[in-house]
Image 1: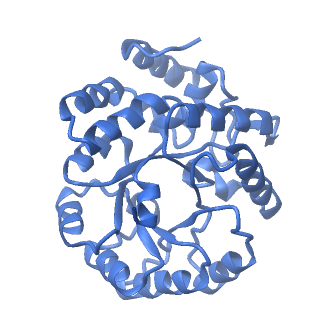
Image 2 (image 1 turned 60 degrees about the vertical axis):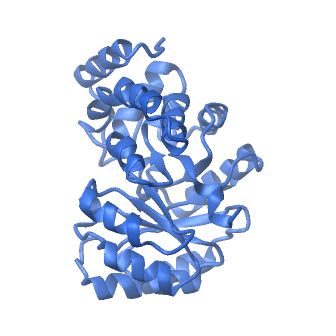
Length: 299
């Protein structure tokens, strides 16, 4: 088994629970145990869903330390607060971070500045040189305003051995198909959109990093496993079961929706930090209705 095989299957981009403005570590413990017991294959600590951009460095370190302690080696950990449009600053941040307790890092492409593909390539190559751990590319143009082309992703994977794969959140099935067809050996393609994860798996992807799996880890991870092992009929059932919940998780921003679901399920507060605002009661009522229609458990 290659090293990269450890990251196949379902990863969950874990939320950072808050209570009265502070990190709620008991609730974080509860969520981590919930998703691991729900059979996800790995954890993403402080990705977009973890609200890393709203935390200061001391808080980031404390969330990572707590996650490592609670996970206790049960599943691999990918550490994900490495999105920055200043390459030199990001390199210094990576070098200053103790990565000994994690298995890989995840980095989104630069936002706001809209670099060329060559600029994106050089940015990622600089990150790969700086990191003591494998790097997962995060392709999320809805947030960065610039897509990492499949040609650039393939070029990165072929040029530097430190790239473990890509989290693809583009829903561009032509580009996904080209990437999966021409990727280097052992280079992973993971879906970054819950609602397209199943069809992405049907194209030959290796798994997905999920938001909804914070609340429903078993159903999402079973969907991914079914696709991995060719049981597309059962995988489709899970895909359809979750399908109508997805829109309500993103209507008012992420992780606003999934935190609403987690509060409804009794795992943590729906509290978020500005500029996000907590899920409205109107949206939460629709979310609860969708969960109940999916025959999933609420309080």
